[in-house]
Length: 93
Image (cartoon, rainbow, N blue to C red; front, side, top):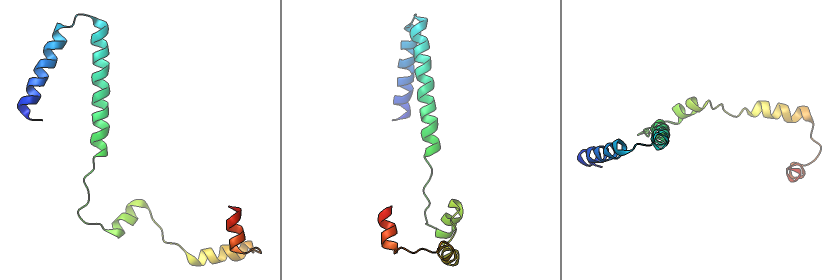
């Protein structure tokens, strides 16, 4: 939307508001304007610029990723002493 069109639209809306006499409808309009402004604020906060380059290490750090620890997994597996085959256990899920 061009600036000229936006300015014309604003003047048109203002003139319509100035013609209103009922406080009830003015209050409803005020509430609607507040809701629209809040929605615009939320959308503005959600609109984040994309990274030009994907840096896996920076992404891991930002998301708090920790590598899978195979040694801890093996220790856990041994400590629970599974008797059933893994396939049977998976079917139970």
